[in-house]
Image (cartoon, rainbow, N blue to C red; front, side):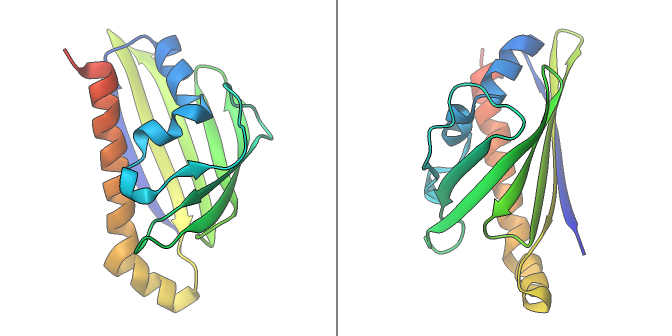
Length: 152
């Protein structure tokens, strides 16, 4: 069974500024908790594009370093992009990033559909750990984006 996470927030900035930030792979580490040990292995450049491969290490559980490869599969400038896992810790990973102009700012929504690995054991791990950790990571991202775009 697929699991999902959805987070929406208001950013006190214009759409093009928000898009410029979130669509640069080089900004991923700025919105990822330090304990995740996030490390990009290839040079993704400054701007994402459909078909782009991003390869990195991440330490999601107990400091164990995992190799993760995602592909940017869809990009619509100033509207959304999608990253999908090609190799990594999940049986399935599909992450949508949506932005739109709203009154006096930008609304950003992350939607993740994922499936833990290892069948029944993965379902137990998701119930006990994975879903909480993913919510923690996306709460961290929410708070970092608040600091970047909504700080007075």
